[in-house]
Length: 421
Image 1 (spheres, one colour):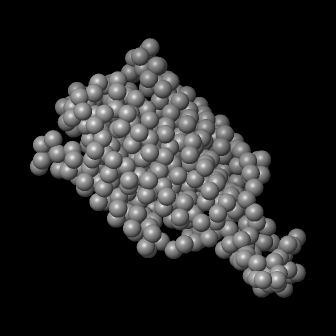
Image 2 (spheres, one colour):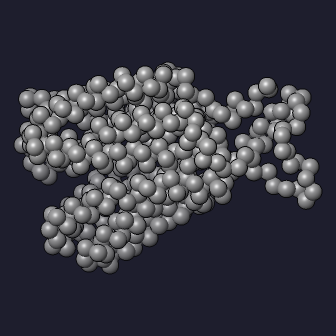
Image 3 (cartoon, helix red, strand yellow):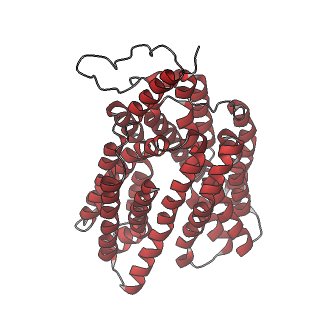
């Protein structure tokens, strides 16, 4: 719950800035749309590849809280820089730094959530966290809208408010979140379980070593990338990511079809985030009951529905609202569920790295999908592009479901290894 509050405050900060960034770059700084395109591309891609590095650092040090704190702190510092940036290089550099901070903190934070949760309720735990996280993502743009409505051209005021929220988030992490050490806790749990069962002391046990050698559990290893279950998960995440275009394209398609005023455009993001916030925890509990792999894969059918709503020749509020509801529900079935499923498939010693790897695969493939979809839209038009994407995803979902083989992948290697031979 505390990590959810940290994410809530941080997302209020980051999304308030993201909501005004297009206007700030083009209107306040007088840059071209091409310049904003460069900045937006950096926003999408800068943090993807460092997620694995953040997870690796958390696993190697067995200190995920402090690795996450570095990421949160870096993002908070960029808010200070935005108060003084006055050109494309400065803004672009700060955007990159902010996304790098997000990339560093994501996997260690998710590893902390998994370490502090009952393995049977991982979906619910991640769902609660994502609900609070998304509440911040919805509140941030609204806060920026209110500030700009009250203070015309008040971009600096938005940056100051954003900085305050970011500092509160870092303070909550440092002062309130326990310094859990997942690898050490897993070792102690395994050892005590064997003692309770009257089994011989575990191989390589150092409990009686001279000097009281610290217990840190199984060492880090990249061997998890050779496990069939993990490989299949990464393949499925990549394949589905290649067919998941950015939300902005769906929103642009709705606006192009319905012709509503551009000032309402930001509220499309708010609508999707509101649905995600309401459904993240219930869908997480559902995933714990019926199988996280099933929910993750079949949840992409909701995205097919969103594409269809945006492509359908039925303008009006009904199809627009339906598209937002489907998008929000899609994120509820995928974002936190992916982290929960990944954490259940790998040993504790590599949990953060595995989560970061899965998230990186998803982020990179979605970047490729958005770039390709932009070309497809240009070549074939909005409607045909959306129907092609929907048809391809409709074919891919059952294939991915077969690869995942339902819920049989979902087991915790640490718990399996505790069982007697």
